[in-house]
Image (cartoon, rainbow, N blue to C red; front, side, top):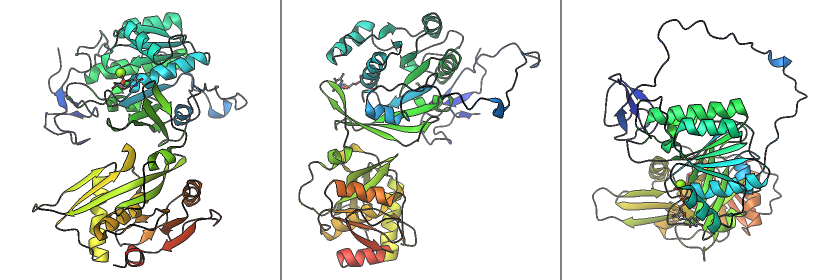
Length: 453
Ligand code: TYD
Ligand code: MG
């Protein structure tokens, strides 16, 4: 019997003591459902278990080499994993349905199998024949991967225990169900139990597991966030459906830097690596136009140039529109407020649209100045000087703050043929990037010098 009064958010897994329309923890609407609690063991004493033997940290040999990682040979994937696949690790790959998770993982499985790992691809969504057909279409028909179509956790674990694979891919965790849990497949308790069993299996038997998790909008199915805390590494596969670019982003990694990105392009023959993403994100840019500014950003350990596009137009509505794609709406509101309060440039009565070209999502505050430049350039209908990159953080006082990795940002810009940069004063540079640098201390100076406003 389900214990009444257990309400769980299917988006983030937070537990509430009553139902409400919106989850306080993650802000998602209509995601809370009543759920059966996880089945527990016999009631009563908790003592009486097996006695463990803790080790002293310094007793652990430092001579021992760290476990060897396996490289897939897909450079963009290996970098996001922090330098290849760590043995016995548990990895979650989340993303919208149809974004290309199965395609990516089938390609990765083929490469890892080729690198000598005994690889299983377990699909709960497609029949083995369908997976094989897809593999053939991707030119991977001959890869030594073992396929299985299974959804029962018991069957999967039993197979894993007898076959002892090095890598198991579960596509997707939402289809796996355990017969010990009294809840529908895909529910928070099922997904949690399955992920828990699979990750602990990974640690015990030296198998790496990759769990695929669909980001769901439907409140009945648990999302990948529910298992984020259980795994070693959380990757999200992002992109706009209409664009061919896909970005694999590490949001958590126990074995490498977080926030690292890998860039792929969806082609007719599967996902192709994009080795020089700056060139890709800037392709199709013509002569300088008002509202377009190139931002020199850092994603993970790598510099990346992207075009920020703004459009500012008089509004017929009482409440002007603020629409943002690829950046934070609250951050845009802040920049507009600073421009108005500190520089006397009002945006009231004007619709504002901001877009990061190529379907990329930017979260760095270093993009502030590029956004402000794009907004001003659109509003004043004046293009920025040609071949100029912009970056810097804007504070509420209107002061410009230097940002990290100034030198790397400048070098990347120079590599792609840019000749000038506008940056806050005080950034650490050696000055040998070859770019003409314009340093600004505050936003008012920037507005005056660049736009004469
Ligand atoms: P898929 O990997 O099935 O997505 P997910 O597992 O994340 O749900 O990818 C589905 C999309 O990818 C589908 O719309 C078609 C496209 N695609 C290609 O463009 N080229 C290809 O070679 C493949 C296999 C898929
Ligand atoms: Mg899929």
